[in-house]
Length: 337
Image (cartoon, rainbow, N blue to C red; front, side, top):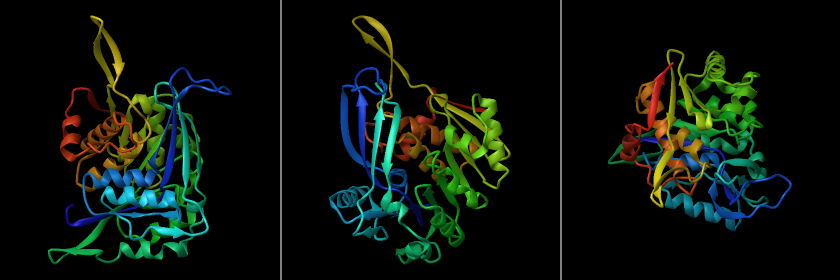
């Protein structure tokens, strides 16, 4: 895909991440560490994609403020094309606050996406045009968009408008239980959907308490016209399906260390924020690159495991070579079910 362009549309924001140093209790103050960093599902996906392929056009909206300028700087350092990011002079750049327990797993989060929610279809006409003509030339060869990834932070009417106007494969990250319903009108246009357990429960109306429940949910979603599904199940791994095959993946994050002459078990997980975004990015990239479902599943699980080992939302060490090495690890299992 060296002669093709990726479009990624959706949220960008500053993340404020608070991680407890001891067991977390609701309605109580807990000692911990607080860090500020760039985030947003689409922004993370775009940065992950740019580690594997270029160019990546990032399409979003920000405020005319210091936070927005900081995100621009990070995006350019990540080799993203930002010429089509919209600037709102009357609104602030989006912000996201997450609270993690002592294991690094998220227990609560709040986002302020007012700038994103202000978007209307008429605002994104320049985005629509990107998919219909060459965006640039390299060595006198035109480069066309090969695929797009969007997130459900976009308003529903904008999602529908882009899906109607873009004649390229579209992948979507469901983002959250509160926003996943926005995707229903475009299911028939999706080359791939990445979602988690609670988002799948919201869409299907059924509780997912077992792998069998998850497989049924996936088949229900595939019946709506989606070509491929990536369902993250957290510590239980992930399921991937395309109507012909269903694959389960898992990565063993338990590692052994010698402490005072004893072997103790610990985890390679540093931070869970961003693992799903990495999985979505590689799910889309591997699919468009021609990988069969089991190969795309293996690489996607590898991407998530690498993200878990990074303090940031994006692991800058994620390259194609690193993905392939991790995908071949005996710690990563793939099973056709």
